Length: 160
Length: 254
Image (cartoon, rainbow over all chains, first blue to last red; front, side, top):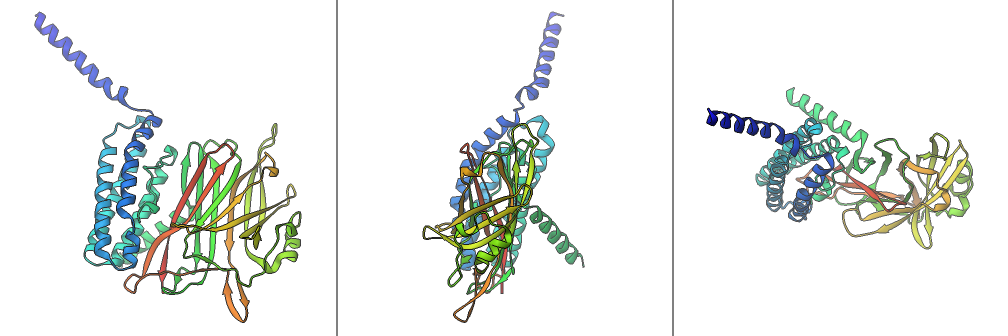
């Protein structure tokens, strides 16, 4: 009997802890922004380094060189989105952030497609996708404008 | 047909996105930047005359009073060549305290653009109000440096502002930079809120047709168009804060 009570109490405490844990862990918007900016800063700088001269490469018809740079940027972008999407989100901003991540995923997919088109020596298709990539980036920025992101916001000038 | 529909939807989406301009926020300050150039199709191998429109705005997220701007910096790409050879210049003192008509009378031959500006005025103890000014831009020189002299005239209350934007060439994506320092003698109350400027001037010098702004779209034959970093606006405030926004646009090669 005592053993049953002890197990029940343990289970109840465990369930209670599990139920309250997400609420206690949910950060404020400011904490969330500070946490994400720390993650995004090195990635944004790495993107800038990886993409240096990519637009000049396209202008000079060095599409294979540009493709390699875009492939690097795609890997950095993908890893960044994966890392920041795992961070706990402020509960009041859940819907807005989910929309933001939708745009980020779309950008990631465009980057992959741009790389593929450049590898296949199709600059026009790649450039059309770059326009869509920029458009999605601007849409992503608008969704989280109030967050005041710097490193986590989209800046076309970081891409070559 | 489906392809055409998809293309139209994408085009409408892109146009809608650029019509509002791109925004950035730092703290409760929001900066907006929009603009474009015409014609969009430019020669690949030589600069051609263009007109450039730039529109920038500031507001606060909570509608509180804007902080005082002390410096405005506008960057455009190096391939946007500002050429003022043979174009008359206007000295700022010639248009100080003048109406738009008098400014045109004094410096009309140096006119390179027009626009408008909105300032927010907050006098202590009174509700804030907006001042709308008409802008004229003249080709000029300040202490030997090339400049765009902006003349703003508001009718209510009657106010004239003459603001030189010094032109500098710098390395980097925005190779041509226009910088204006807003003097403290403008007073503590007017706060810069919005401006729109269209720069365009064709003129003849030594029998040759010239243009104040020229641009090319330097792409190889196989690349018909490409996006590029078109402009960047940076505002510095009296409290030391800074906010900036860059925008990209696409040029088409012909």
